[in-house]
Image (cartoon, rainbow, N blue to C red):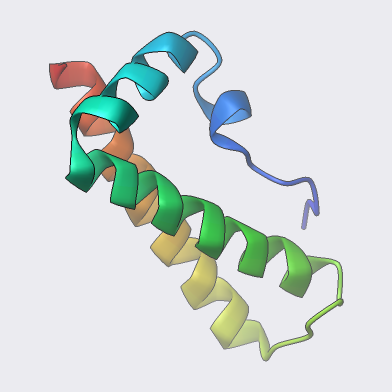
Amino acid sequence: MSNTPHTLQEEFPFEIEKLRALKGADARFAKLLEDYDAINDRVHRAETHVDPVEELAEVELRKQRAAIKDEIARMLATA
């Protein structure tokens, strides 16, 4: 498993300006970004064994991160 953080800037390198604009204009979008960063930090800490968790818990965290990222992508596409 990769233990490289999946920052939104890395995930959406061509959408950085749109990310910033939507964050300032849409409270729900801003909350999604906040949630993504929080869950991404938890995944990274689990993968690097800073905060070890059961394998199934780590998989669940990754699924949550993916779901939030999918919603961010959908909102970026329709903005």
